[in-house]
Amino acid sequence: MSDGAVIDVRDVTKVYKMGDVEVRALRGVTFSVARGEYVAIMGPSGSGKSTLMNLLGCLDRPTTGTYRLDGTDVGTLDDNQLAAIRLSKLGFVFQGFNLLPRTSALRNVALPLFYAGVPTGQRMDAAMRRLREVGIGDRAEHRPNELSGGQQQRVAIARALVNDPAVLLADEPTGNLDSQTSAELMELFDNLNRDGRTIIMVTHDAEVARNAKRIVRVRDGLIVADEATASA
Image (cartoon, rainbow, N blue to C red; front, side, top):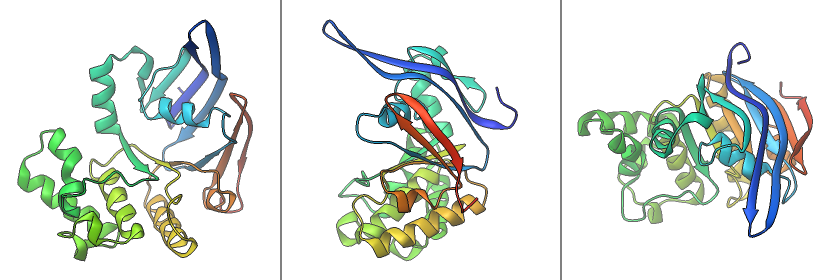
């Protein structure tokens, strides 16, 4: 494993079988992400970037090659172990927020800690700290339908942070938001990264990607460019 790498991907392929047809979604991908990096992954539709994100998020396993997350070889894990490492090592932010509609912001944020078996008082305290960290502590008792899109995404980011993950994975996090709200959220991601958070963001938006310190470009299942940005 590369020294200091929290994510280390070595010659990873992913092949899907659709009847008699094999689809080679990833064709031998190698890269690593150091702790504290802020990386954007870009690529056109069908490039393999969503498959790569699923592998990084331990939602799938590579067909060949190795993926180590914070020192653990993901390919050796069974389904229960994959679920456990997702819960303990990863925080997810999605385009669609994925909040429980009838549940307060505070309880939405606390949910991963409920699944982790953390006692009620501890998980509510932790959830409140994260809501304050993302700037909406005053909205803790509001339900999602009482919040703007930007506020809902801040709740989702707080939820992703509540288990203090090794890596924050964001999949098109500004896709449903207007340009002003997107800019405010990018500032929040910048602040989180300055505080030492490792962030990997999948985006098709070049302006969003430029906020990262490094852009990895994927095409036809291969990494075709890996370069620092002006933000680095």
